[in-house]
Length: 151
Image 1 (tube, helix red, strand yellow):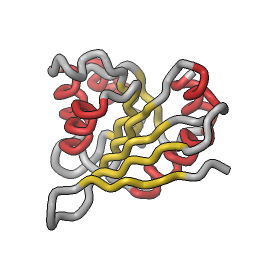
Image 2 (cartoon, rainbow, N blue to C red):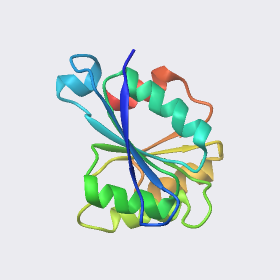
Image 3 (tube, rainbow, N blue to C red):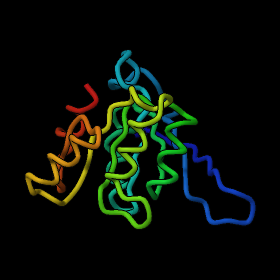
């Protein structure tokens, strides 16, 4: 079992929007081997974030979390993750707009983005690619599909 130590970042007096979880044990999974070490999850669903976080932490990956597009873009600029899993349907800045913002900024241009969505239409996949996404996974996904993206 991998233990986590949460660190919450938020403006004074506001509700936390971003949490950082880092594996305390090393030597397992892709993160210890030199591939993907840090992944940012941007999703407004706590259940989806927890599921994805569990898969990634079990592989030894450091996980950053944001619950909306705006926070996700800022977190990516600040922490420069190796990969971003980005939901499409979120209040405020949706995943398409966040992806466009990430790929329009020199600080985050080179960070690969995998869109995660229950939207399985080909048009959504094409639009995601046009916004700069590197890949697209339809929910529900398997742990194997997620781990394939970080290998």
